[in-house]
Image 1 (cartoon, one colour):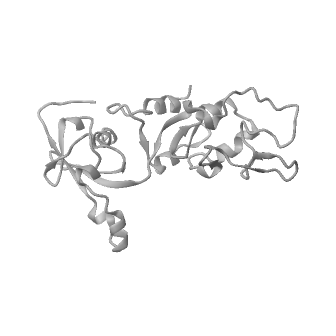
Image 2: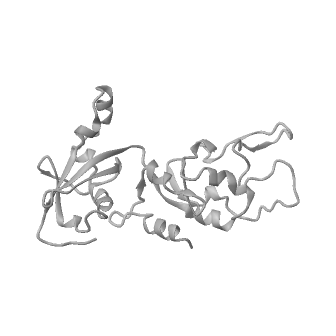
Image 3: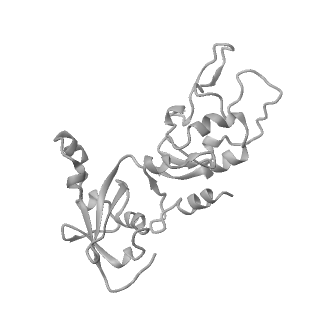
Length: 231
């Protein structure tokens, strides 16, 4: 098993909430090579690195590798959650529609002796590759440590709770759970999202007013407690 797969498996669910982790499109885009291959489709994020390793050298892997790090929802029928289909002009039969090129687990348009359909569930229906949920909207916030005055800008998912944002902040401060998190002097509810805590997403307003959102980025302040809790 690749180190990428081990890492993604560990981050598949948030350690605190136990629910699937949310990812930004930028995070998915970082996994863009055959040895570290993620895609997103229909609102979820998948790590296809093991699939690529299993079929290394197979020409049918090429369209998937070319899609690494990207959203491929346009490959699918959102109602059936299956690959789009069309009437094949050569045979008059209903076939999968793959303008990007035929890929793994897609049968050939005509009968062939080398076609083996004994692979079981096609990869796009295999939930074992799922690592999380693609965020519908992200935003940037500043996290300011009132004790050290250190400041960090984080891209966070709108769906995340403050506790899940804390998980994102841990690489910058392993003792983040030993701080009280506040916004405008008010304690934040760690089990609620930014929006639910009154930290409203103003990106659209800034865009309408032609304002630089970076200059008015909302800030969360961390105030140190006595205990040194390390997650």
